[in-house]
Length: 628
Image 1: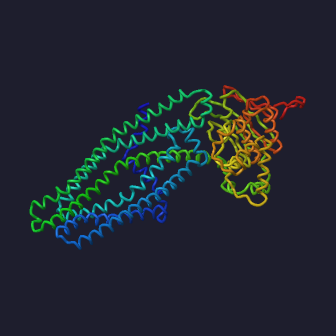
Image 2: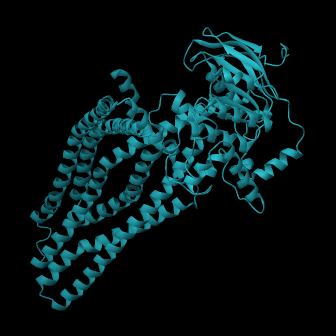
Image 3: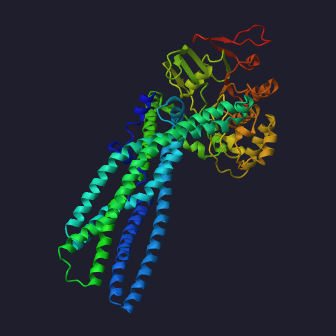
């Protein structure tokens, strides 16, 4: 286990791999030469250069005070005081503006990077694959929400100083050479090289543990989120003691990693502070050589004091420019750790997308995409219905399965072998079998979120909610209003004229037929933006009935139902399936209840060995007649 953990983090260092991964993000950070991030970055550079000019003049203030006070020049003193106050006000203004602009740059960067990750994350069913099927990337949610935030925030604060530093260093090397000769800049350069080498050796272990710490933070947060989402289920088990131990275990792993990180950071902080304070006396060592050699014997005491003060500032600030880069090493470790995590996720998302593209490329052109076009999400349901009514007559089948064999992902146990099935309009199919035999797995394969081992699924319709709708075993509800739950997975659209009343009346009718009018009363209307978690507010039965309201609203030609009536009564089940029949919805249902057979025409039965059989369901009153 330790070896595997080590292999997963061995490349997460401040090295060539970090720079390769960071350059992957540059097109998102700077989309074009005239984009908002570029303009904000240029403004930051201008502010940084202006600040260096002001800082230089502020640094010369003490030497000028030495001069005017040594000469007892009262008018010069007050003039110099006015200049100094003006410079200080200017510096305060520049610093505040720099912070303001860098904060805006951080927000723009976070928005750009997160939106680009969302595009890849929500492409087809990549989000399902990375969370359920692919386990190589821990906590994708944390990487998108927290790691991107840390990366963009930290980078916005240090990007301008990193770019300006070489120019500032070059200028102060020139000024240092004027005051103390070649020994000043050469000594500072040697000092910086030694400090850089030492800090580089100490940085890589810190980067690795920053990466591990972020992973442990995600695991600890996810455990508490799990408790929050399932608190009622845990409460029925009175499992507080067990969950406390599990949370404490995650906390121990996190604290233990932070202890290791603190120990690694100790040596780095010691080196950083050591070189900072050594730099503060180096200016006096550098100026001492020309003074002791008599280069400035001709100067008066006030002039010599002013020279020492000015040269001290130049040398100290030159060292400060170098040590700022050294100080940034601690910050860069945070950037390196988060960059590795963000780009690792990006690489996995791209790999999964390529796998999906390869799979979809083998399907017929007209139905390669799982989902539906953006146009359907933008136009109203009345326009969709009009378009469908004007379209040619729909196919009489949703899909046809030929010689299908499938397993669970990363498993060799066959759940089904050699299945042949055609889901035709008007022919309801019931899928039965013991728990765990592969019934729900069939729906995952049909939907395309699980791969097939052998065989084909020929889709004869577009997989969009107006044609075929899947109701998963665990109902899904997004955040927002009651209307948003009903029209899901469509986006909200503009409703004009009489269509508003038509749609509202339709939704209220379905709420009444599913005995959910009280839910609309609790939300105070269809469009009230509620803040609650729908899973906490609705019972399991209410969630299943609301899922049927969603089905009736879309009124597709086909529906695939996975245990969709397991939490409601027999009478409510009858009402749901009767309304499906009245609306002309052909269903493929997974279920255990015997009462479901009366609403279906064929039974697809799975055995524990992976074999399946199809037989007609003989209803009472048909005199034994079988269905062909």
